[in-house]
Amino acid sequence: MLKHLIHTAERQRQHPALIDAAGIHSYGTLLSRSRTVAARLLQNTEDLDGARIGLLCTPGLDYVAGQWGIWMAGGVVVPLSPQHPSAEWHSALESAEAGALVADSAHAPGSAETARELDLRCVASGEAPALDPGPLPEIRANRPAIMLFTSGTTSRPKGVVTSHETIEAQVRSLVEAWEWSARDRILHVLPLHHIHGVINVLGCALYAGACCEFMPFDEARVWRRLGSGDVSLFMAVPTIYRRLLRWWDVAEDAERSDLRAGLHAVRLMVSGSAALPVSVLEAWRERTGHTLLERYGMTEIGMALSNPLHGERVPGSVGTPLPGVDVRVVDERGAACPEGAPGEIQVRGATVFQEYWGAPEATRSAFDNGWFRTGDVAVVRDGVYRILGRASVDIIKTGGYKVSALEIEEVFREHADIVDLAVVGLPDEEWGERVTAVVVPRDGTEVVLEPLREWGRTRLAAYKLPSLLVVRAELPRNAMGKVNKPELIRSLAPHSDRATKL
Image (cartoon, rainbow, N blue to C red; front, top):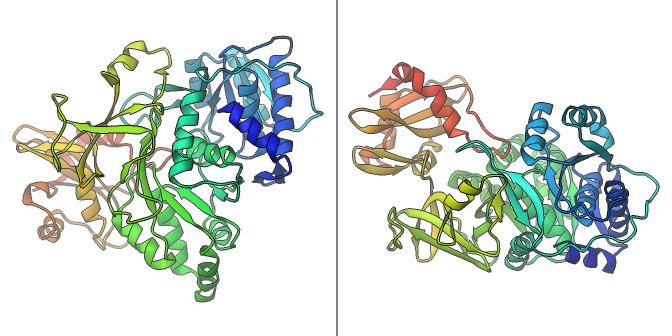
């Protein structure tokens, strides 16, 4: 990966690579700043030799120069979120057994304190006189490159170690499928400690020699950039698309008309990291003329499935396997599932991660004869995959039936009085698990169980209808907008007697 990035940057040194709050930065500037970071990290050593290095920077030039500089010096990048409290930085660095921390000036006080607590060297990624790192180590393709932590929605976060060659395989698959080129400019509003922002957006853009424009998320600013005619790609999570739709619906007609004209320059809009409700896809298409492309992936495997760049995008589906990725669906015995039967998605190929850091047993148990066990359940019809949910929290076993929580959520999101909801299974002596709807009502409305069930009867089989109802002001979510269902279930279990029951 690094060799290709450097080659691309050398070939087009004057081409804009990054845009951030400080301005436009060329590939030549990025190379120079990266080599300075590498020189600071190496000091009198020849090679970091796989040392884990924390990276704490605001999205922009400092972050990317830090990432490339760590790689040039032979280190493994451990991205940290500027939005997280210092306790989470401390935990991640300690888990990774980090050897140093690269930080920008905006995070100097907090990073310095964290570095002191862990006895780490703190290295600045910001602007300074260029330093000559001297001869840089050879970075072999199979060297570890990055450690990203799983979201923690199903268990304690694990450090996922991915090599340079694996990152390159993940990126090349998307560059081919989504036809990236040096002419592209992508608007980047996602965090840089998750695979969506690091690989799908930043990694693909720089691999293709394109330009990546960073912007903190703000509905009005994002819409105006998307409608400017300058942006060709945009990727976000469903929560962001919902927020953008709410802004659009209260905007002035004249502004919406101006934005629609500029949106013709955007050739691709992608949604991922959480299930995209069909209602959001349809609302987005109605307002903008763009059909969002939904795909499927995870930290351990990169992206595995995608709706097509050209051709029909099936609402509620995640498409077909991406180039270079093998995907299968198997039952509980490991046998291939027939068409239309639910089973676990398993993935193998060059895009799959190396190991969970410091957890050899967890790494071994994650594989089935070379196939990574995703824990996600899907059905396949005519070669197209539809995700039913996580085997552990989204598949509810009630009265002998296996029910998809995501299917039920999709239906009840259409209810006029529901702003947000999650469907989970709560333990029950008679039913095994009871289908439980946790809803956030629209302001000024009341959601009641029996009318809710009555509304759903024409849309779902009776055994799929919620038999428990809990009303909440909000749902717990992680940084990528996914509902943290294990946390939600833990919070509900002691109080399930207070739920509205059938």
